[in-house]
Image (cartoon, rainbow, N blue to C red; front, side, top):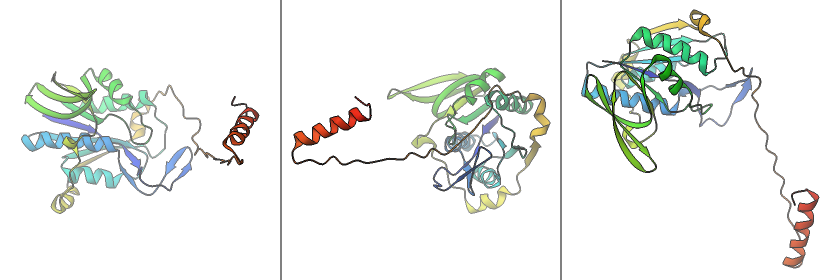
Length: 255
C-alpha cells in the first residue's frame, strides 16, 4: 500500500518577527504546516501496524524547506518528492491541484493525506478540489484512521461533540485535524541520521508550466497596522461622564 502525504513549508507561526518581500512573508525558520504534521503522524501510525506500507511526502515549495523535509523523513516517511518553485510563481488552488494530481496519478497512491487547512493562509480548499480532480473518495476533519483491509479504511472524526466512525473505500483522500491521537512524534537520533540516506526526488516548477492556469492572482499583501487610541472620560459624577461619553460618540458618528 502507498500513502502520499502533502506537506507545506510555512514560516514558523510562532516567530513574531518577519518582513514582507514581493508579497511573500520572509523569515529564517521554515517549518511543516501544523495540520500536515498531524496528517503525517496518522500515516506513520498506519505504517507502525503494517511495515509494508510506503509513505511519500509531497511538497511544492518556494522556500528553503530542507529541514522540514528532513524532519518528515526522520519521523518515518520513506521518501520525498519536492517540486521547487524557485521562480516564486504564484499558484492558486486550481494550479496547485493540477500539479499535485499529476504527481499523485503517477505515484498511484492508495491513500492521500493532508492537513485540513494551511498554517499560513488558513486555506481549506486544496483537499476537496484535489479529491474531485483525482476522483478519490473524500472525508474531512478526520483525527484517526484504521486500516480494515486492503480496500477499506475506518475514519474517525468528531462533529458537534459527537464522534463518527465511517468506513471508506480506497482510494481515498482524508484531511486531518489536530487531536491527541495524532500528536507528531519526535524523531530519534538514529532516524535523524538515517534520514539523509532516504531518496528525495527533486522536480522543478517549470516541468509543470502547462498545468499552471491561475484563476486568482495575488495583487498585494501587507501588514495591517492597527492603531488604537484610548480616551479616558473624566467627570465628577457618573451622570457627567455618561453625558460626555454620549457627546463623544455623537461626534464620532457612532450614534
